[in-house]
Image (cartoon, rainbow, N blue to C red; front, side, top):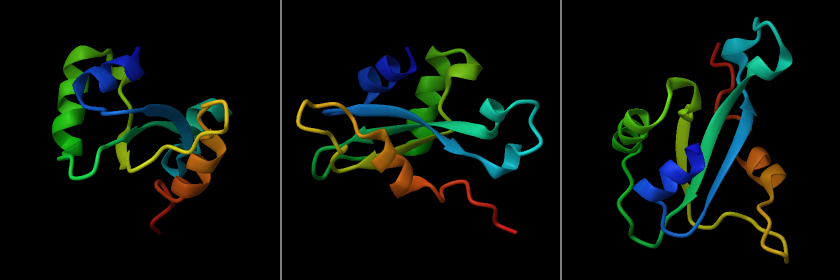
Length: 102
């Protein structure tokens, strides 16, 4: 559902929803709670991107627990020959997004 809302709102060609490690939540009850959900969307060349505006729109349409922590624009989402999103490559590219800043 979160993916569909983001696509409806802004994405030109593609979207991937993935989890990234979030050191801010290392004291969480379970390992799954140590991750942050992130939306990665493809934008066409010269497309206008405003993450805060997009997040506000998504928040109005989704339950709070379904809203991605960040929405990241990319030129191209990596895919295999069958068209499947290569989430491991996206995780490698954005693995430091929530890196500890201490």
